[in-house]
Amino acid sequence: MSSRTYWLLALSVVGIGAAVRFFHLGDWSLWIDEGTTYARAMSGVLNDQGPMYSTAPLNFMLTRMLLSVAPPSEFWLRFVPAVAGCLGVLAVILVGRMITGEAAVGLIGGWLVAIAPWHILWSQNARHFSLVFAAMTMAYGLYFRFWETGRPRHLIAAAVMTGVGLMSHSSAAFVLVAMGVYGLWVLVLPKVRREVVTPRKLVWVAAFFGVILGLYLPIVVMVSQYLAEHKEAWNPPFNVASSAVYYLGPAAVAFGCAMGLFGAVRPDRTLAAPFMLLAVPVLLATTAAFFTISSGVYAISALTGVVILVAYAGVRTWESGSRSFRAAGLGIILAVSADYLARDFQYFSTEHGGRPPWRSAIHWTLAQSPQPIDLYASAGIVAQYYVGKQGTARWLGALPSRTTSGRFWVLALNDATEVSPAVEGVIDRDCELAKVFFANTGPKRRDIVVYRCSVP
Image (cartoon, rainbow, N blue to C red):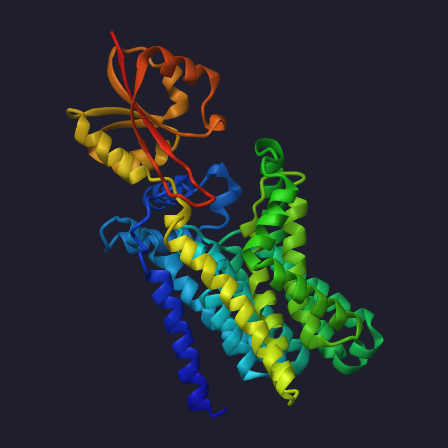
C-alpha cells in the first residue's frame, strides 16, 4: 500500500468517525454530569469535590476557552469531546500500525472505533473520557514502539501523551499500569527479554516511570484519601465489568482475550501488547468498584486493545491465502462491524442518546408558569442551566426544607432511588401530576415526571 493510499484511507476513516460523532451532537438534553462540566468550566471552581477534578482540569479548561468565544449550547459544550473522539479514531489507526506493523490493521481498527457505540457515546458527552482515550492510546503505542526501537523520542512522546491523559481524568492511570504490566512481561519471559531488552532501554524506562510516578503519585494519594472519606462504592463490580464487556462487544472481547492469552503464552508481542491494554483497565475498573466509585467507562481505553486484536486476526487470516480462510477473516471483521452498527442504530433512534429529556420537560414547565418560576429537580444542576434567569432551580433534596407558600414545580426521574421519603411526602401532600416526558423506548428508558405544586 502506497503512502498516498494509506493516508487517503486513514483520512476517510477519520471522516466517517467525525460524521458520526457530530451527527445530532446538540440534539440530546444535558444530563447531570454534563451540567457539572458546564458549571465547573464557566465558574473555574474545580475543587468542589476535593482534588478529583482540580488535578484533572484539561477538559474543563478547553471547554471554558471554547465557551468564551462560542454561545453556550449543548453542541458547543460537547464540541471538545467530539473533536477528541475524532483524534481517538486517528490514534487507533496509527497505533494499530505501530504495534502490528500492518497498515491494514490500523485502518480496520480505526474503522471499528469510528463506529463503536461506546466511543460514539462518550464523544457526544460533555465529559473527559474521549480525551483520555485519544491520549492514552497514543501513549501506549509510543511506549510499545520504544521497546521495539529503543528511540528515546518515542518514550518522551509517550510521557507527554500520558501527562495529557492524566490531566484529563485519573482513570488514565489504568493504562499506565498496563504499560507497566507489559514491561514486566517483557522482562520476565526469557525469549522476549533476549529479543527486546537492553541496559539502555531499561534506564530510559526506569526514568519514564520514575518521573511520571514522582509527579503523579502525590495526586494519587490525595485523590485516594478523598475518595475513601467521601465516596462510597455505589456501582457493583459486576455492573462495571458487564458494562465494559457489553460496550466492547461480548464476542469481540471473548475472541480478543483468546488471541491475547495465546500471544502472552506463546510469546508474541504483537498479540500480548493489545491484550494487556484490553485486560488491565477492565480489571482495575472492576476492582476499584469494590472500594469506591467506579464505572465501566473508566476502562474505555480497552477498546483500542479489542479492535487491534480483532483487526489483526481478520487481516492475518485473510492473508493466509485459501478461500475459506479469507472468508473467515472477512467474517470476523463484518461480524464485529454489524454488532457495532446495530447498536449505533439503537443509540440514534430508540435510545435518543440515552439521556433523560430534561430540556423538553423544563422548557414545557417554563411555558406553563408565570415568571419567575420556582422549580425543584433531581438534576438540579441541569435545571439551573435551562431555567437560567427565568426563575430559580434547586436540587430536589432541598424541597423538604421549603418554608414559603406559593406555587412551585417538581421534576423527578421515574426511579424510586432518586426520591427520598421526605420528598415523597411533600409530593403526595402538595402536588398533582402535570405531565410525563418519555426519554426513549430503549433499554435505558428514563422518564421525567412533572408535578404542579402549591402550598397555601
